Length: 101
Length: 387
Image (tube, rainbow over all chains, first blue to last red; front, side, top):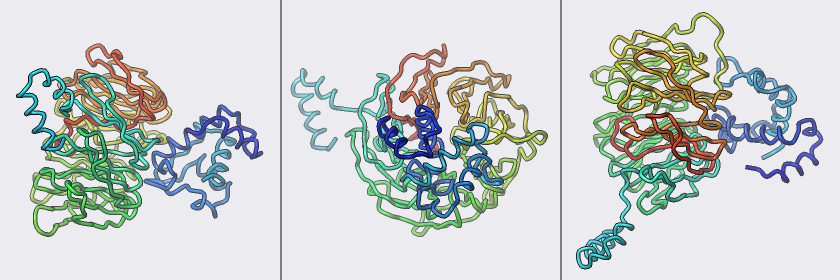
């Protein structure tokens, strides 16, 4: 698990993330690693779900990533996370996926 | 323990009685042991049920998200199947890695043949099943598939069965001869997400995600055919999001029934084992993930997907009523019973601990620290077909 100082440094260097309180950001990162990781792998290299590494998402616009997180993909195993995440939180996760290894 | 060491201990034990206790300390029987996956750190914890304790941690097993394992017939070795294609043979007696290979890019599980000679791995990328010598992990066979393979189980007669997520095809592979014989035995339906073999190796049950239903194959038959059931559960009303795919390895077979997780519904479905007719539905706290029979009892225990994964419920298979609701910890990922049912061990991923509950009182009796624990596997699995 990432330590708090690392995350703070990350937040300071990264204005897009500033809207999410630090403790929630820690929760989101944990959720991304552990719960998204159930299908996409802890290293995001894929599983039942597609790879979510930075390079795998390089050509996908952020809005599309956010939309998939919030509303899922019909007829696949990707569920809509809207009941559990706000739009800001989904945007935070999309940013994280697209910028962080 | 090496034969020479063992001989030496026996000799010392016979020659000088006071040394016996030392010798006993060094002999680690494995019947009460288990292995716990620590998913985020690529490590496993060897635990001892008898003392409710962790014995040692073994590291370097790769990406263990969704990892599982199976045991050698002598309960000495665990074969750990990692997400990243790693296959690691762990020696419980020596507390170390005995052999390790990376056999594919992305894997989901595995099985050991009934005679303990072959280990098969179910792969996502590239899709297929690979078979290895259980002693050396040397490759024996490589069976490609048109997609991600799921639900790999051992079938008596040095055979394995598996299904393909992308195509719905179900295969039976016979590895008893010089060359493997692979047969497609039917199509289960859309997006089979997992499969399980009943404890008598009679029925291979394949759960579907892409459409309603479960497909049964009679593996005692010379010509197994797909038999679909539960095709219309929850017809009325909107399905709910599934934040974690149910697992079927724990499908309970209680009181002449299968207890099955409804997909997209917060229900357990009870099906008559012979007729495959639904007999009841039990509303539960969330999307069921594992439904596991408490051995030697009428009860099944169920855990749930996010966001209800802090809850565990106990259901009576006779009345189909929830008889207890527990909150053992955060993110309960798995439950494993002592073989005779006296206690159950639960992994609390986000509390970084194992919780041990006495099944008579349903009260916690102990806990053991563990790093992001997921699957718990006791060695008695070595003797059960399908595990």
